[in-house]
Image 1 (spheres, helix red, strand yellow):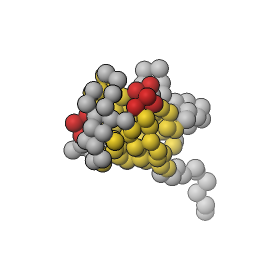
Image 2 (cartoon, one colour):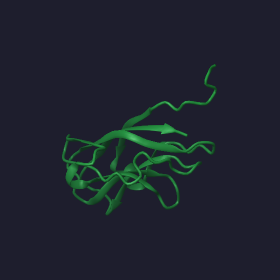
Image 3 (cartoon, one colour):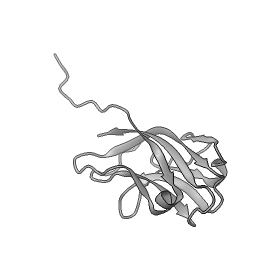
Image 4 (cartoon, one colour):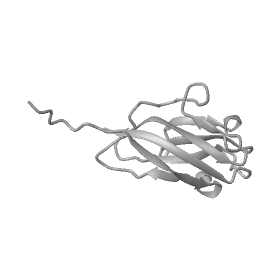
Length: 128
């Protein structure tokens, strides 16, 4: 007998966000009213060392963003890949579904970043 349930595949959002974009919050996975997203892996890499913001987060696009993964500025040295692991990140709601109807964004937290010019990202996620 065939399984008729929808099976979610791991998807990957990749790209670059300029400091203007991630200071404002760049949407990397658009909201979908029928689905919620689960962050299951990924990494960040900055061009230039991050010196001003406290963290760069992968979080929901909700009015009050729910943080999935938070990378401290000390982990974001020029060109070094910071994977979403317990040794380099705070995994707040990593592996937990967001509410339906919100997307995912890359967002600097604390002060606006002025030194690191670009942050590359690879965010692995699933939909439910």
